[in-house]
Length: 322
Image (cartoon, rainbow, N blue to C red; front, side, top):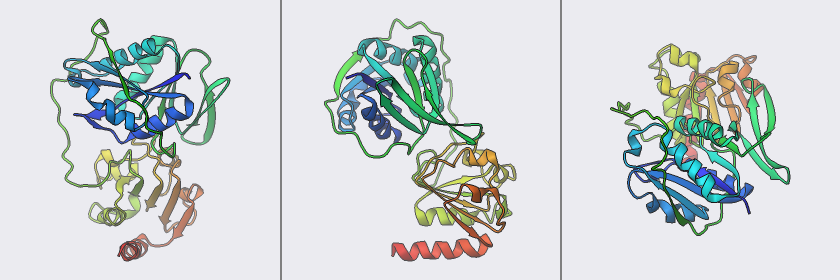
C-alpha cells in the first residue's frame, strides 16, 4: 500500500490538535506515515504517533530547528518522500509554516500543491481533493496533473479516527540540505490569559460583528462562548472597529475555521467573512436584519435583537449544562 506522509506540528513535544485528524485522513488514502522535525530526539513522539495511526514515523533531528523558518520541514519531507519510495500524497495542516513548507516541497519534488482542502478521497486514478474557490462561492474537485499531491487540510474536514499502528521509527539525515533559511532571533507572543480553545481548531466558535456596537458590548459574545466552552471569533468590521484584536478575525483575510458549530452574532455575512466559516458543520445566525447575507449559509437563523436573544441563549445553555 502506498504511504501518505503527514507533517507533524508540535510545540516542545506537545502534538498539535490537527495531528490525529491528518493521520485519520491519511488512513483513508493509504498507509499513514508521520514526519517529525525536532531539535533533540524527534523519535520520542513515535509511540504517541503510532497510537494515533502512524505505521511509520520519519524523524529528523535538526539542531536549532525551532529557530529556523520552514526549511528543516521541507528537507525532512523531501527526505521522507525518498525514504518511503511509494508515496500517494503528503498532508499538512493549515498552520502558516506548514502551508509554506507544503508549497516549497511541491516545487522541490515536482508535485502539485492543493491548498485548503475540505474533503479527500482516493480511487484508482489517484487522490481527489474537494476545495472552495472564489471566497467560497464555488466548490471544486481537484486532482494532481502530475507528481505527488501535497495537500493542506482544513480542521474538522474528516471524521473518525485511524486505528493504532506500529509507529516504527525511521531516522532521517537532512544534514546535507543546503537550502538557504531565515533564523528567528526573537519572539514576541501576545499573552492569552483565557483558557478558551484555539480558534483554528475549536469545535465550537462564537463570533461577533459590528452589530455589537462597542468593545464593551462585545463581552456578550465572550459570555456566550464561555457558556458553550467555545473559541471567540469576529468579523473584519468588528476588528476594524477595535472591538477585539486582529487575531480574532474570521474570514478570507483572517482565520479560516471549520468547526462543528459556528454561531454568528450581529454579523451581516459579507462574502469575505463567509469564505472563512461556511464549511462549519452547523451554522447559527443571530441578526435583526432578516435580509442579512449570513442567513444564506445558516442552518438555523434567529431574526431579533441580539441583546435580547443572546442573554436568553446563555441562560438556556447554562440550564442545560446543570
